[in-house]
Amino acid sequence: MPAPLPDFGPQDPGHEKQPDVDPAAVATAVEAAAGTGKYYGAATVRATVSGLTGTVDVIVFTGDASWGGYKTVSGRWIDKPGEAVVPTPFLAATGTRIGDTVTLNGLAEPVTVRIVGEALDPRNDGMQVFTDVSTLTSAHPDLTETSHHIAVTPGTDLTGYVDALNRDLAPLGATARAGGLDAGGDMVVTLNALSLILTLMLVAVAALGVLNGVLLEIRERVRELGVHKALGMTPGRPSRWSSPRSS
Image 1 (cartoon, helix red, strand yellow):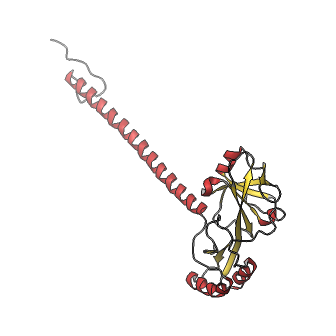
Image 2 (cartoon, helix red, strand yellow; image 1 turned 180 degrees about the horizontal axis):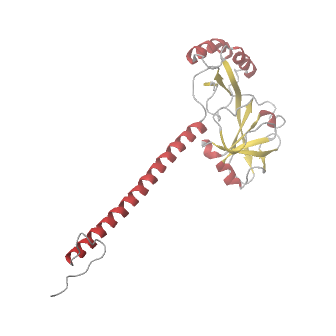
Image 3 (cartoon, one colour; image 1 turned 120 degrees about the horizontal axis):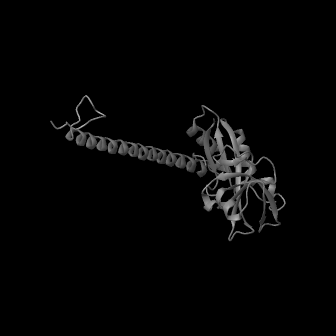
């Protein structure tokens, strides 16, 4: 799997695009850089959805972002215009499920998208919609990428790649910096660790319960044997005994 490389432009999807940066020129520089593997562009706009108060982040991608740390827990990732992936809290808040449609308002014109996947992403309280940039072509024709995300090819020196790419990006007003995948990946790792800890705790509690039962059983047996011996039970008759007959 290609090693992840970092983003260009603002790291926070809520930041506005810097006007001095030409996204097409940045993409050309990325493509031409030795060691570039996969990459995609991302931009964020605000929209409203019926049934929700406030706005949601609509994150649009140029290129395939399925490898970028977005964890789909059910359904699938977007593969054509008009499709969307949303986090679990979004489904709960809107009362929707995979296969339903939602309309994004507050743009130049309403845009209806079909939910094809459920993602694990905690940012913005899960109030996000992930879709392809072509989905918003008519509603936001001047939308351009605010960041690029890259995975270098195996064996590429990450530090050297970033330094070389920064020399090409400097005249364009963009900067490359090394970083990890999106927060969804970190959340999955955290949840897996918590699940492991909880599983170990349950195993420990179950083991203690069994041990407690064994100890109680032993204690009862010891008491019974003590009573039986006091009444005359001999070692040769551990389960059947009788008191000595009076002469």
